[in-house]
Every structure is written in C-alpha cells, then in structure tokens.
Image 1: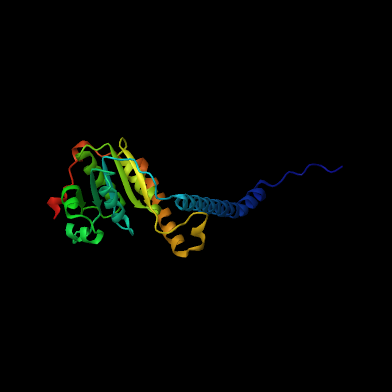
Image 2: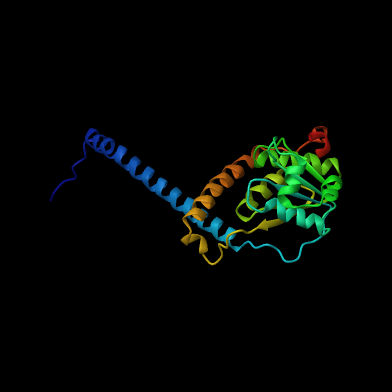
Length: 231
C-alpha cells in the first residue's frame, strides 16, 4: 500500500510562478481578442444602421433648420427646405471665416431676399462639438422648440448625440443627406465608404465616451448667432 506523499510547498510555488506570466498573457490575449471582436461587431451594426438611413419623403414643419457644413449637398438641401417653408429660419454652422453670405448664396443658387431675411451664418464652429455649441446658443437665443437637423447620413448619429447633449428639451428632427446608397450591405463593396464609416465610427465612440462628463449648456452662455454681424 502506497502512503500519501506530501508535495513540497516550494516546488508547487515555483511551478505556479512559472505558469503565472503565461496564464496572465493568455488572459490578456483573450481579452484583447474579445475587445476587437466587440469593436468590429459594433462597426458592422453602425455601418448597417447608416446604410439603412434614407432622405425622408415627408418632413414635419419645424421652427428652424440647422445644417452643419463639411459634406456634399448639405447646404443645398437645407436651403431648399427653408425655401419650401419647412422652417422659419436657417443656421449654416461651421462656415469658413473667409466665406461671405454672397458666396454661399451664389454656391447654392439661393434667393437673395431669402438669404437676407432668414439665413444666419456661424463662422465660429470648427468641428461637430462646436456645431452643437453654436447651434444651442442660436436655438435658445431664438426660443425655438423644434429643429430640422441636416447633415450627411454617416454624420447623423454623432451630430444628433452632440446636439442632444445640449438641446435636451427641443424636438430635433434628423434629415440625412444621402449621396451614395449604402443599403443592403452596399458599403461592403465600396472601400471609400468603409474608410469614411470606420473613421466616423471611431469618432462616434469617442463622443459616446464624453457623454458622462458633458453638461447641458447654461442659460448664461446663451447668445444669438447673428449672421449680419459676422459679414
């Protein structure tokens, strides 16, 4: 009959110490792989969501219209919405400081009278966060309750997130401008679309990470963005 042989505690400790770094490395690799899978799955969901966005056929009338610059056809669409009476006033946010009212009017083919009476121009915003901040000042300065928000389809989620962060009580109606159809997985066959969507996805995640640290704009920070004073 064989008796029980006690294991040397020092030997067990040495074996555990040898396995420790490798086991930790395996857990780290598995964790990194899981994070990558989650990131890519999130991107697929994000891209599919963007691909499913379409320009609305019916648009509810709103107090105002906001368009953020930076993408093809955005301003033309917003001016057309204003012309057809979908909003009382239009803010073009993020305009190059060198661009004047007449430059924008000529580029869009808009009516001089319409631009003179009902279009405001924001030269201060440099990015989407700035667009949201300047738009919030403009909306609350005019006491608007409802806004049509015009931007490209891929830019809608992040723009809505930043706008909602500051305009949490106003009715924001997204109006995605679609220049390239990406529905039914069409984005998978377009390298340039994948690049744009991937870049926008990473920016959207960064914006999401900022949400817990964001604060609603206070009334003391509200001021009217008046295009006439910027000309």
